[in-house]
Image (cartoon, rainbow, N blue to C red; front, side):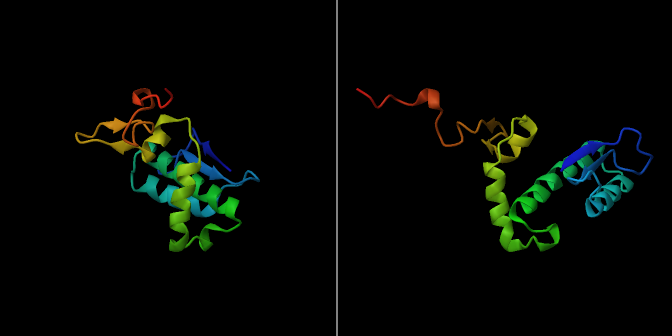
Length: 124
């Protein structure tokens, strides 16, 4: 599965599509992204939804279920899966970040309360 750009999308059409492993658009996601485009959501918002839905569909695929079989009971399992899936993109990592007062984001290394650079050596 992958998100594909549609550079020549007509007005009211999303500029991205979620494609399945066979290279076909995922109809339910296509319809949802089209709804967002018709309602004049920003291009970046539509793209973000496409990538979020890609994650959901990859999770379902890995578990051998369809998106229709995704239940609230699976939501916690999905959240845990999101934490375990590595991402090198800053924008995707931010969703798992921790913010201090004032909105400043802490890196994942400091979200445990200390930075590895500040640890005291335990070997004497």
